[in-house]
Amino acid sequence: MAKPSDTYKTIQNSSQGLYKDKGSKFLAFAYPVFSEEEIKEHLSFIKKEYFDARHHCYAYAIGLNREHYRTFDDGEPSGTAGKPIFGQIQSFELTNILIVVVRYFGGILLGTSGLITAYKAATENALQNAELIEKTLNSIFSVSFEYNVMNDLMKILKDQNIEQFNQSFGLSCSLQISVRNSKVAQILDKLSKIETVKSQFLLMK
Image 1 (cartoon, helix red, strand yellow):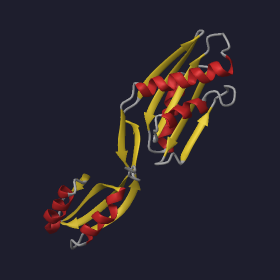
Image 2: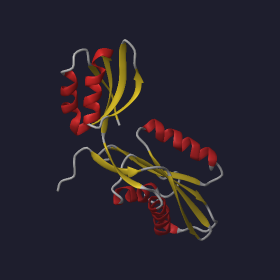
Image 3: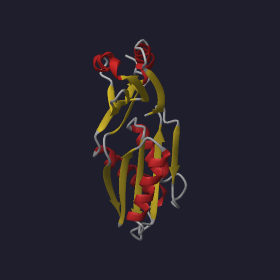
Image 4: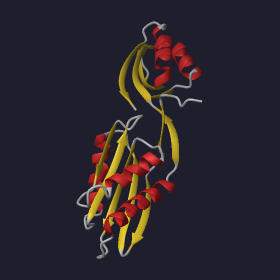
């Protein structure tokens, strides 16, 4: 059966991995991410927390088909760090993920093949320690409506199992909903048939 076009695999929470070779220590940190802004925050934290490490190498992927990705070797020989990290992201079929591998140099050179093995193994260990989950790509909408139609609106949201948050109820009401992309047209059509209900797209997540 074909995989739905709006599902992807990622990790539930952050996780860590470790690999050691000839005195060098490789600490891997995996994070679920949704934006490049989140990625910058995690990288800034890691660089401050492990400021005394020789290298802070990473790879990330964002989007259903990993449309946005980057690898970074941070001074290691080209292709020996970021690429094997990204290779594990692909091997585990993940996206919306950042993996940073911090290296403490042990004084003995590992060579090209040794570095590739080390960065791959540290990353693999972090992913083996992570909880892998399948998620749907959702669109977030702001919905405004009059109080007298709230029951009709809530019935639709409950029947369709639509997540809602940031609720504000008064004479004029509003809330935000998260709708799976494959169901957006269907849900918006149902909501549009309720008088005074207006929906506005906010973001995709």
